[in-house]
Length: 293
Image (tube, rainbow, N blue to C red; front, side, top):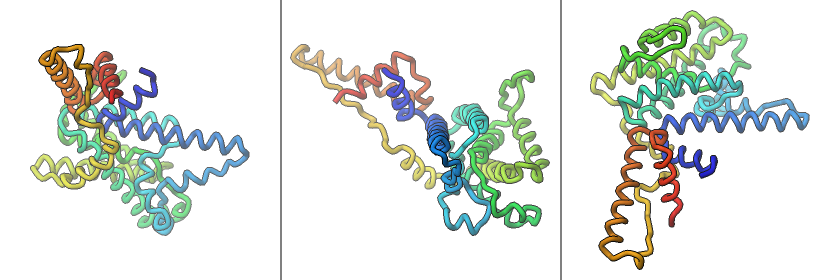
């Protein structure tokens, strides 16, 4: 199985954590390749990034409302992307130990929307930012990621992770330190990003607090997101054909049933723990069976 097939199968059968990381990586590659081609061609005006980034100005936002969604998947600097994906993967894995994958997707998207609205509101409300209103833009998954971080910290505050040079740390302290850092940096160079972080954190806190109290506000919306991000959805049943002339009828049926049960077991494993939980042999078998007509 080639690397392209491996990536395709990993995305198709992976959890939403896997899909979100792949989408962010793919968009970064496309953005940077486009930039390289344009610059080599003598055009260093990368205006297409402006049409995907979220503007601070409400007047500009009205002309490109899609940016409230596109900005949360858009990165340009490699370190910005890597840092966000590292946090997403680390806390996303913890989150999925306790919740369904589609709740992760829901928090990511709504956290990003909340972060974007906080960003625009701050720049249009506080006089301090008026001089930068016309040319300030927001991009990156940080607000979406911090929403997942805070939601996870609210649900399992005493869950420990190991930090390099520090050792085991409860995630509630990581979340608290992050919030304090964002607040004290609201007038710094990345003021807009920090307001977006606080917006994402607000949504993660609100959603998980309500969920812990027994009120799930995401049921209908997360079903819509689930259908949207599951397209094209892999078939639950994989058809396996055999040359029955080489089997007695009972042996053929028994073998076919066992094969199908093994496939269903692997799909259930993917649904529960993600595509990466499969062994190399299981991945190879699933890929081989998916290719049969």
